[in-house]
Length: 114
Image: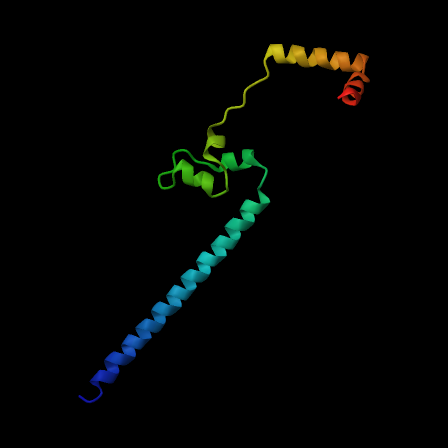
């Protein structure tokens, strides 16, 4: 009868130690995952096409918005559709290029005047 309190207190302290060890392990895993995520974000900066390919629109648990946040991709860039160059723009660029080829000194004169 005299040892009953010791039995309960030792089990409680063992349980607390196990819980503390589990919590420490979970915090360590969280820290490791954060370091790895920061590493991926840093090394993939400037490659939105790669980041865009990672997004799974029909993922059952992670929204598109959150999937974009993870690799640091703006949600709007996921939906962006590149617009081609119009025929009119191509014509104007060709004409400007021809003019510059014929008279490459024109921009320098204009810069001196201004």
